[in-house]
Amino acid sequence: MPKPNFLQESDDFSLVLGGPVFQLFRRAYLTGDHLELMHRRIAIITVVAWLPLLILATFGPPHASIKGISFFHDVEVHVRFLVALPILIGAELLVHLRIRPVVRRFVERRIVLPEDLPRYHVAIESAVRLRNSIPSEVSLLLFVYTLGLWLWHSRIGLDTSTWYAMPGGRWHLTPAGYWYVFVSIPILQFILLRWYMRLFIWFRFLWQVSRINLNLIPTHPDRCAGIALLPVASFTI
Image (cartoon, rainbow, N blue to C red; front, side, top):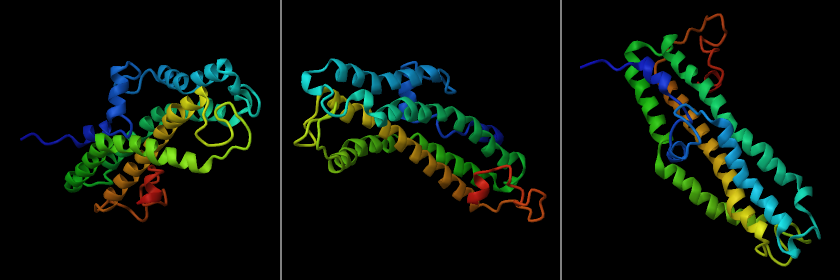
């Protein structure tokens, strides 16, 4: 039987190239096999989250006008959807390009010895399997539309009218408010939770690698036993 190519498997490792949402983006031509079309992806998602708020808040019924906090004066909303959201989406490419070489160097620098490559392969497979898990991303979506909405409802109290809600109850929403609460905020929360899940996958992978008998050299010149070239891994392992 042919021996597995562990260098190739390490090179194919990615925290972001996989999962139901990634496959959905591919079918919608919002990304390629290697996170191409980033500007299109950022533009479309930002437009869906922010532009309807602008339109509904500006051309909505009279009670959504600027009697209290207007849409244009709500800095928090614009920072969320015009700054934070594009950064979270654009960071996927940066993480993809930086993580793949780190995983590959475990093998190239013989930090993982040949006899331990099967265990290293198992750690990679486990991380990829969790990354591609449909139940994981569905759970994030359910979390956003259950606990996420409950937290918003319990923490937001209004004493004056705003562009998205009226006083007298947290669910007295304007048309712009309905889009804000049930579309825009969930989009941001879901993308943020996906990043938390990726961090969990990464640190879980590093923990699994740390259980392997790594070829660490205490007298290595980098003063990190030979893993200073792995900035994240060196703090975890």
